[in-house]
Amino acid sequence: MEVPPKKFFRLSPGNEVRLRYAYIIKCVEVIKDAKGEITELHCTVDPDSKSGGATAGRKIKGTIHWVSAAHALDAEVRLYDRLFTVEEPDGDKEGRDFKTFLNPNSLEVVSAGKLEPSLADAKPETRYQFERLGYFRADPKDSKPGRLVFSRTVSLRDTWAKEQNK
Image (cartoon, rainbow, N blue to C red; front, side, top):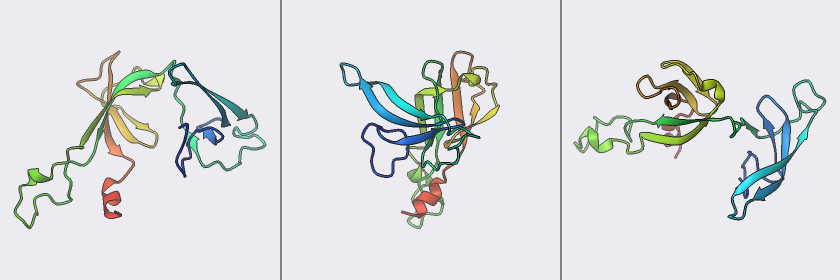
């Protein structure tokens, strides 16, 4: 993010992050095209920050998983959320029908997902963990070679717990 909010611990100008399983990098310059779109990030690397290096133990607040845009696979990713907006949709004291509590956001489809090339031959029903998002499986009906479709089966975030803390 070029102008991040407070407590943003991902890559931004002047900020350091650890690349998952690799080095600590720092964004030092953002390059844009004539339309103002970001085309490049110029970063420095701490070569001693990889596992076993002299500065490997240095604490950095952000760790990112980098997927190469040049090698990434396009995919549709289906993010399922809870079906109802309340915990007990059939126990309404006012006698409302359970359908009143259907969650309109129970399915989000990300049609421009980018995945690691190792998933090109993902078999239907095989499960994968997408870091920080949850567990996914290749859709048995819709996923085909050249058209990958993954559905989230388990989220790593508890949306009910988030609702309780509001």
